[in-house]
Each structure stands twice: as C-alpha cells, then as structure tokens.
Image (cartoon, rainbow, N blue to C red; front, side):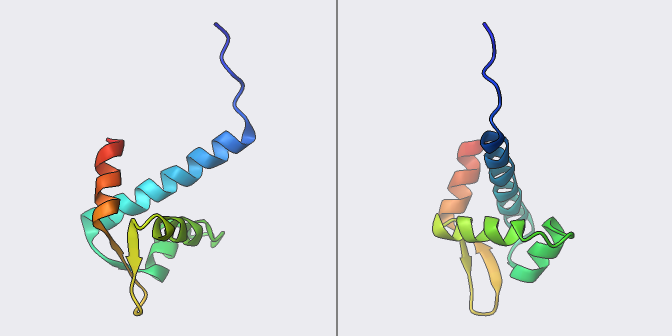
Length: 85
C-alpha cells in the first residue's frame, strides 16, 4: 500500500506541536520560567516560534502567563502531557 505524500503543512504542524510539547515538558520538570528565558532557550535564533508556541498553549489553557512574565504550566497542560505519552 503506497504511503500518502507528506504535505508541507503537515510537517510544519508537527514541528509546532513538538515545540509546544517540549515547552510543557520543560515547565513541568524545571518549574516556572520567564517568557524571555523560554524564548532564549528554545529559539536562540530569534525566529519568534517559541512566542507563538507559548501563546498557542495559553489559548488552550495549558500555561498561564503572570503579570511578571512568568510562564507556569496548568493542570490542563499536565493532563495534555500525560495523554501524549
């Protein structure tokens, strides 16, 4: 049975989901981090991908961003990580 060709959008979507998962895993294991520190850690080239990933996680209520810029994982984020394992 021939495999379906991988569409460019599929690859991009997987990359975004992978970054979101890595951010959640980092927050779970290392605790809250400042928004800027996450960007430096996961996106040293400054492409803005980490910011987009954190905002997507915020929309899904997986992380909470405090007024001080600290990003914290929520219960929903922890459940999402458990489901993905």
